[in-house]
Length: 234
Image (tube, rainbow, N blue to C red; front, side, top):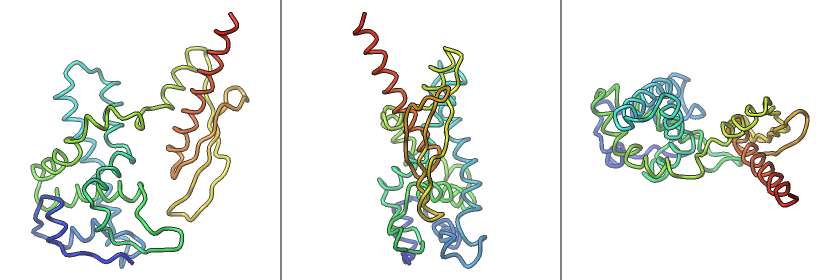
């Protein structure tokens, strides 16, 4: 089991001092080691997710004055992406503070857990110190790294690009889960993408969304190669 470290150590990393240390501990406690479901970070994660959508949405609205609704939605999707939030948690070193049960199949916090805890921490700070405190935390951690995340190729919406390309020709890609393996808390998905029964690509990831993105990227690469070959024949 990962041991819960002193609150003062965590507060230095967070840049926020809690009045109620119990809510901080709950935000860092995985259901596998919680005395009850309510003592884990899962309920806090629900609130934190809503807070994050609002804070990032408001920031984008105020800073991207020329952006239309669709572009704002896509920018927010990138910033609240599981991989993006997990990356922030690793940059801050916060993964070292999560309390969870070690197992033979998992000896470190995965992206999904890190994302959940980031959102739970937002909720904990909000409940303990209010909206100003939680906005300060988001500004210092996520928004401070926003431009780097928005320009990173790892957060391109390949699934959206493939859908847009297919719809131009009156088609719709179909995704199918081909295989799942691993424990429930760290399930690995293998997903294939098809067009009218033709196999276009395959992707794997620790969520269906991640696997679909990777499959879509492979499909776009395949279609681009086919297009290059056709051009070469002309």
